[in-house]
Each structure stands twice: as structure tokens, then as C-alpha cells.
Length: 108
Length: 115
Image 1 (cartoon, rainbow over the protein chains, first blue to last red):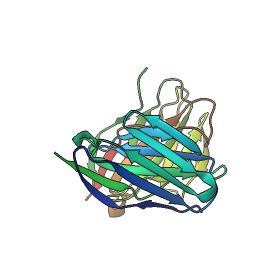
Image 2 (cartoon, rainbow over the protein chains, first blue to last red):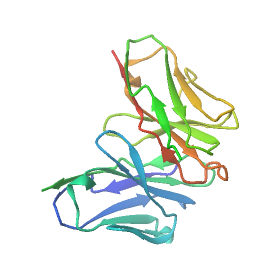
Image 3 (tube, each protein chain N blue to C red):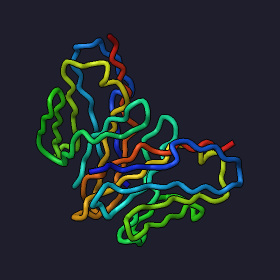
Image 4 (cartoon, rainbow over the protein chains, first blue to last red):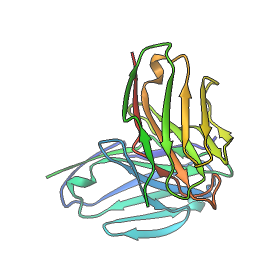
């Protein structure tokens, strides 16, 4: 099945800093989602982005489907951005496959 | 519009027992999926229900079973609990136009501990 690799596994930032999270996948996809999991376990949808670029406030994402990667950009990070960021993909008519996540800690 | 809800939030069971977890889909969503998330890992797909029928299953044994009701709420049942079943169990619902292909919206999860 499709493989999903996220990097870096852990990231510590000072409040106000910018960051880029990466998601590589091993096959063509028809669905790619980025999620933020807060400390209480809730998975929050950030982007549905199988291709192209989207922006939502301080967050933006770009997926280059032909090169099999996606990037999540966080600008002017805040302590509330802390948590685990997951990339999840689907190839064909298969279930959503998650990466292992990037754990982000933003320090005041 | 209410989001996806799950109950209970926490549960402690012992090995060999059976457990039922519940999920209410987001209003208007007719597809529900269940995931298991072990500590430090990403969620893993267990199975999906559409119109009360299972229409996809991940690599989980038959002691993991489910139901979907006419109001699109759902249950996950796990029999003969094992220590490795300790995890966060997440339910996700998908809008009516989708099958596997659309955006999924997740509930807050049920944290199961097996002793």
C-alpha cells in the first residue's frame, strides 16, 4: 500500500517563528489532507489539498502531486499551534493512510 | 450544525472483556469510518460504513466489528480485549457525496485502556 513519510518528526519553535512541514508519499493520490491534533486528541481539518496551493490565515499548504510531496507552512507561530500535524493520503478507492506526524512545540 | 461526537471519552477495561464505543456523525453525513491511534502513531483505518453496510476494512481481526444505524450513528465493538487494544479510537464522518474520496471530519475520540 501507499507509504507516507513526514518530516521532521519533532520541531521546537520560538513564538513568532515560521516553519515548514513536509509530507512525502509513495504513489499518486486523489486525496490529501492535513490535520492538527490538539493535546486532547481532537483531529482538526486544516486543508484538503490533493494538488495546488491553499491558504488559510497564517497557514498555507502546497501539494506537488507529480513529485509526490506536500508542504504545510506555518507563519508567525503561536503557542496554540502546538500539537501534532498529520498528513493523510488516499490512492484510488482506498482508505485514508496517515503519516506518523510532526510534533510541534511552540515556546513563548 | 453539530460536529461528530463520541462516547464515552475515557474507558478502562480488563483483558478478555468486551467494549462498545459510540459515534454520532456530523449532521447530514451518511458515511462513518473508525480509526485506532496507538500512542505516538498516526491513526489506522479499522473499517467504514455506508448506508448501514460495511464497505471497507483495514487490517484488523474479526473481533473488531461495527454497526451503523438508520440515523447514521455508529458503534464499534471489540471482543476479547487485548493489552494492545489500548489506544485512542477515532470516528470520522463524510458528507453524502463521498465514499472514500471526500474530506473526513473527526470526533474527539474515546481513549481505551486495557489492563
